Amino acid sequence: MSQSRGRVFGAVGKAVGIILAVALAALTALTVYIMVCNMRGKAAEVFGVSIMRVVTGSMEPSILEGDYIIVKRADPSELCEGDIICFYSRDSEIYGKPNTHRIVRRLDDGSFVTKGDANRTEDTAAVLPEDIIGKYEGKARFFRWLNSFTSLKKLLLLAVIVLMTAAAVYEVRSIARITSENKAQKERLVDEEKQRLMRQAIDREKQKLYEQGYVPESEDNGENGQGG
Image (cartoon, rainbow, N blue to C red):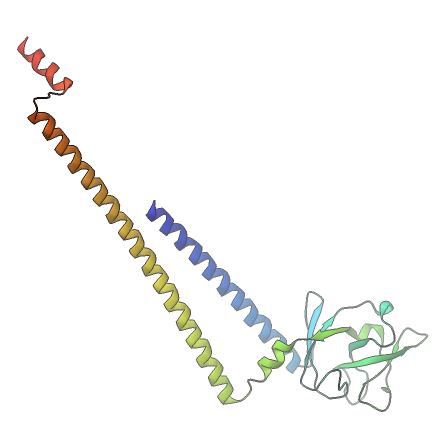
């Protein structure tokens, strides 16, 4: 029973370890994908949601330079004045690069006039519906924190923290495994000792009965059969 329970716990531990490893690998791959896309000036879109890095302060104080923002794919017909949108700009200075500004008004042809909150003038180029990446939904603070680890000292500190955490997890798992094995061994020894004591008690009772002249029925019949 104890061995079966130990095998079950071991299988569950392995399954949890595999799930955590897969989740960590997926998170790492997603983070790398987002970082690479932002470095190349492209939207890192996953299931209709993009993570974009803001490279200017044109939307301050609402959105700060260096912020990572969450942009959700939106139907252009549902966008209205005051919405903050991310789009590929047609401005000659930043043509084809992502830009995040607030909608000032919609034009008759379905395009949008936009403006940065910190800018004094409206954008010179209108935003066409097909250039819209999505609507601003909030900030992805995790990626700004992650981006702060750009210096060598911070990267080394992060590496040390990761290694220490991994070592601690390994030690905890090792202690748990050893504890489980010791517990199973103790239970097995206790069971063996109980069985040994029970056999000794039975043997003592049999010996007492023999000394008192009691003969089991099976042995008595056997003797009678031989004598006949």
